[in-house]
Image 1 (cartoon, rainbow, N blue to C red):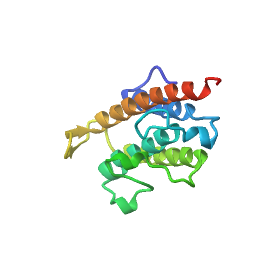
Image 2: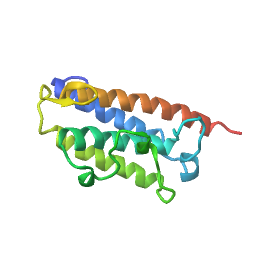
Image 3: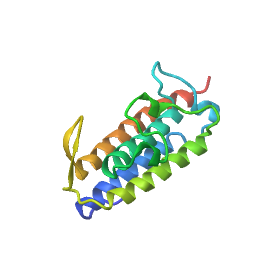
Image 4: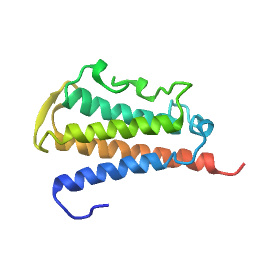
Length: 157
């Protein structure tokens, strides 16, 4: 973890730390445990990872890079579909999907300055700085969800 550096280095490092923290909440789970529904929503350990990959694509591939949906490397609509995991997808595959989407996000983000802005239909004018901070918030929140789900799964019966 970087604790001193430029604003960009600190923000990007914190985002990467939260990406890693989210993935760590599912490491070592069986595919069956990763799919366990322990809450009323669509939130499962594996669906949190799938949703995070979708969030990466929505903000970096669709919004900042302005790619069409067909050009994205997976689901990229702003709806509950980001939580949908196909029956034949393994936890390892979904983790790899998030890692690929994160790498692509890093590449796209590197093309912009923190102060570069774009108009978002929902949020108004947003900067790259805001987007990176949003993703830190998103992944930190979901890592917390993942920690709670993991606690429930790991409790001996």
